[in-house]
Length: 333
Image (cartoon, rainbow, N blue to C red; front, side, top):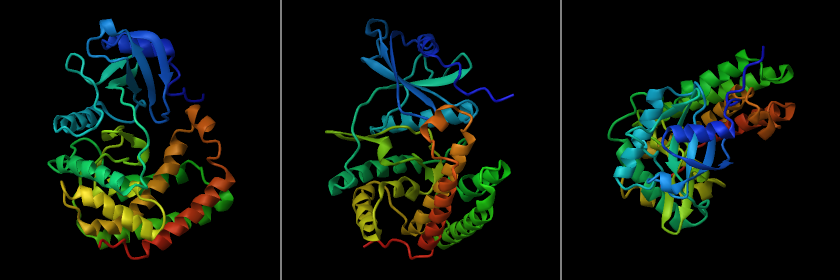
């Protein structure tokens, strides 16, 4: 019998009933927002019934069985701690002292709606501004580690996803040897990159700090979606903001660090991990898509996944990463 899709029972009425059960009375209007891992909705409220509402809120329904309650609450506590320090992140709203709610077998949280646009990462002042706030996030994140949430590491982002893909026969048979050879060599290069970096400090991270999770307004950036927050090296929250050739990334990193180091010291040894972390993300991403393939939203949104061309491209991508990891790291001037 095929697995029941994880969100099959989350109808519009169920969303509205869930919010009402947590004290957020909707006026009947909702809009599904772009999210695949979770289900996220903008919900308009009856303002006169909800004193802590604006015109609308954002409700996030967590994917069943991905995180434990303790892990989700640790994410919430981190964002609330950042808000207390006046760092511009979007934290969940509390209702009767609770941030994590349950309804109809789903767990969900309600957030204030914050608008914004994608930051212009080509602008040097924008990068410095973003760096300043990432530095502030890391200054708080460094005060203690997550107790419940996992780490960004070779095992959970590299070896385990590789083994899962192999065990579930996602790699086409005629490409299996080539992919396995490439991924094994890539992971060996990742391990060597960690050895070259040495013992680097792990701290609480955003974990998925790319331009799509930084919303820009005239007042500057604010950071959203801490769903992937983990313990890990600071460079994990910096490398996804870089693009282009080596010279471009070097300049961008310098601009980010010019703001970042006003609030938190950056260990240059972590530059050995930049391409290693990119490699781990690429391996993890393929396994993430494969694990979600029973969710109807995924084949519809990612029709190119699990095709012959997809896996051919991944083999080439891994070979490119192997070459990059063999190069000297970016150098700070």
